[in-house]
Length: 151
Image (cartoon, rainbow, N blue to C red; front, top):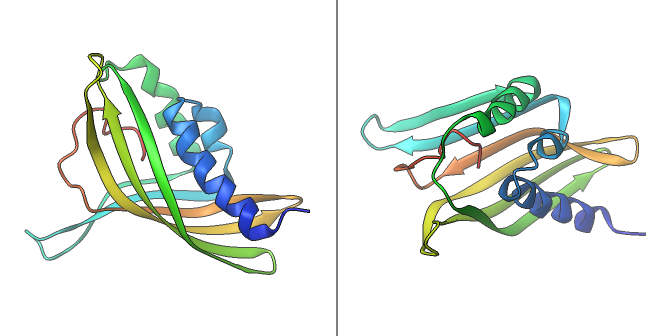
């Protein structure tokens, strides 16, 4: 039997892989029905945190479903995720993970696209864990397209 810590760590890594593969329906399915995705960064200009994206599961699914209809930079995004902490208490869990997203263009050149940290709240539903809330806390604030796609 897999320990819950390992199970949650695998789901965190899977979330990045699903975005990289543009498996958007599967990514959205990681979220509970009442799940929320938030993309935030600290803005020195206003000396406070700014929310760039705040979506419930249905809104997240709609945004991702529309992504193939838009013209994005050619190339591939690749998530590198380092799980830092997973704490499980009964049917609830909390996790943090550092992430770096790389973008490789059509010519094969790779650059860092975004750096940040996931702060996740999880809930066990039946035999599976679902995201109740993902806060993607960015250090990077200068994003180029495809910045409309969650990180």
